[in-house]
Each structure stands twice: as C-alpha cells, then as structure tokens.
Image 1 (tube, one colour):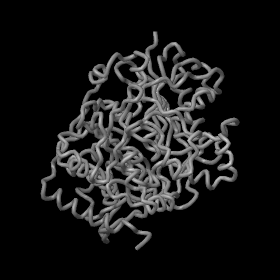
Image 2 (cartoon, helix red, strand yellow):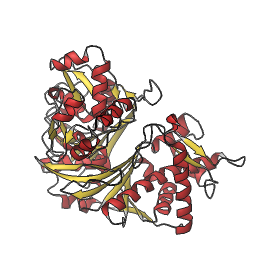
Image 3 (cartoon, one colour):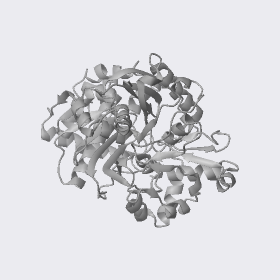
Image 4 (cartoon, one colour):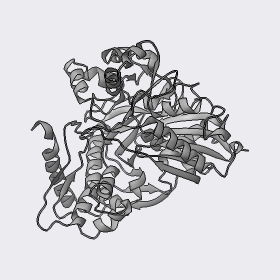
Length: 500
C-alpha cells in the first residue's frame, strides 16, 4: 500500500522534491539550484531544460530509497507567471523562460493601458496590467523570436507556465494542461468563468490553440510516461495536482475559511487571504485570484498582495555584496544592533509590487551616516521585508473591512526568529509559524492526495496542522507608526526612479 505523496516544488531559484506521509511530514527530500540569467538590467530568465533537469535530479535523489508502489500520486507546485514556449514536435524551448520578476514587457503594458484595457483586465482576470504576468511575456516571445509567430499560427508551438512544462515532460508530451490557479496568473484568463479570454488573447495577438487545458488544482493530469530519462522507475504514477506556489501554501496552511490568511517568505513575499467562492475586487491595488479548484467549473478565490524581492535581498547580501557568508548569518548580524540606526532600504530591484505597482522603481537606501555599520544594513534588509508585508496587510485589512487576528507564515525566511519578531512588531499582530514551514510543497501533496483518496477530506489536513511558535508584538504603537511613516518616505525616494 502506498505510503507517500511525492511533491514537486519547482521554485524560482531551485527545484525540490519531497515525500510526504499521511501526517504531512517530510520523509525524504532533495533540492537542486539552477542558474539565474540576467541578460539586461531588469530582465530575468531561466533555461527551461535546466529547470527540467534540476527537477529530475531532485526527484531521483528524494525517491532513491522508495519504489513506485510506495507513491500514491505526484503533486506539482511551481513559480507562477514564468513563461515557457516550446516546439510541439521537437519539445525544444524556443527561448529561455521569461521569469515572473522580469520587467522587459513594461512597454507592452503601457500600450495596453493606453488602449483602455485596464478596467477590463481587472474585471475579467482580477489582475492589474503589469509585466509580472504571463500574457505580455508570451507576446514578447512571439514578437522577438525569429519565426515564432509563423509557427504559432500553424499550431506548432505550445505555451505553458512551469507546471504545464513539467506535466508535459513527465507525461512524455501526452498532456498539455494547467490548473485554474496558474491560468489565473496569465492576465488572459477569465477567473469567473474559468476559461481563456478571447478578447485579451486577441489584444496580445496570442493564438488560443497554443494555450493549455485549464483544470481544477486537484485533478487528473495524466501519468508519468514510460522511459522518461532519470525517472524510469516512476512510470505509471498519477499526477494528481498542479497549483501555483502561493495558492498551494494557502492550502497547505489549512486556510479553508474566508478571512484566513498566510504570508510566504520566499524569493518574494506573497500574502494571500481566502475570500470564499465569489471574487471580490480590491480597492487597494491588490489582486483577486483563484485560490484553488477542487472540482471542474468551481473555484475558491483569494485576495493577494505580492512583494517582488524578499529572500532574494538576503541572497544579494550574500552572493553579490558578500556581506554575509550564508543566508542564516544575517540573523545574528542584524540582532547585534537594537535597530537599523535610521537606515531604510527599499529593495525595488525589479520594481515594486502591491500596493504600489511601480515597474520603474529601483532599489534605494536612505538614512546612511558615518556611524552606519554592516549590522545596520543587515537589519535594514530584514526590516524592508517586514515593511513590505505591512504594506500588504494594511491594504488587505482595508479591502476586507477587518484587521487580521493572526497571520500564518511559511517559506524559507520564516525560520528566522529575528525577522518574525520584527514582522510582529511592525504589524502589531501575532505571527503564527507552523511546525512544518514547507507548506507550499505539502499543499501540492494535499491536493494530489485528496484526488486519489490518500486523505479523505480537508478535515484530515486541518488535523495535521500544528503551530511551532507564536510571535507576539513587543513594539509600542507610537514607535511602530513612526517607523512606518519613515518607511513610506523611503519608498517615495524609490518610486518612478527611472523617470524622475
């Protein structure tokens, strides 16, 4: 009898594979990093074949001690919006993947806005016109890769977000599909009717034949094909879920009641709140998106706020400035000082996400004095992550009409006690960190397991969720308000940087 669900967690900087048992506990995992490609300022790419090979390597390592009979199903969760187009016959990508962080399509977005499509995009897709989403990336690839438009018109090219690419590769090209959550991040998907929108596809000159079949997040996505190199022993295992990483984390955090919210501290930060079975339009520049789908034609919806640079800023300190030897080293360094010494850092490396949505903002550090030390900068970096999440929480509280009673957290940077305490202080709200912070991967596992009967209901998942620690706010309201006002002043120095 199968003991595990295999979760494929394909992220922005690495591919992971984790085996989960019925308690939602990891029983073996592997992680493989891959190259980040920066062809120009503000441009970010990945090699799709390296995404695939790193995922295969992670799966091979994680499943080394088990057999196919031990695995009930495979669940997939992935970096969203990242765009891949490949040749239907050869399976070869026509270009590197354009990553969600990439800002190269800002001019296409401006043209869409000038055509008066802004309100239609928001009403139909729940999104704002921005280079963040897949639609303009598809157009850029078709416009800029020689011969791509002709091939697309002939039905010879396929588009997919990373989940679609992995499903297609795993099934040997038999299944070209995505789920509602990933489709909802393309800016060409009608989230109310759960189908591709013809008007937006026409506006971007995207042939609809190249789009994948949208399915519920917990559904039949085919089986691992015979003879997939490196995965031969997994042949025949059903692929039973696909879900964008942030929605998977919301599911893994058992946020099943409207009003429950989580924040994931990863490469970026993503705050997501369950709003039930009807989409609500934000008045504060948040996104309305699909949280998940458990059956065809039906969805649970969410409000979402996105921070483009969070954990990536710690990586920048480590790899590019070489101020710390490891990501974990930022914690003792930052906690060696009581505060940032008046230094404020706005990590707008690739613009600012919600609630600002400024494609042209750039990273800014203010308040530096002769007394500023390495520790103050480290503290300002952690502060910047917490401040950006505070921006989102304030916007979400305004939209929902009520402040959050508690914020559930996950993701790599959530293991930092220093950052979590800063976050509690900035929000004035308790931060609840679960024992299992791998909620993205376990969310994909839960969705797959529900489909194949590994778990009988969502009640089983609620029973698995356990708190590790609650961080209570310790900063008084006056100091909190003063710090936040200074943060907002710093943000004003960063916005519209290229056009000032």
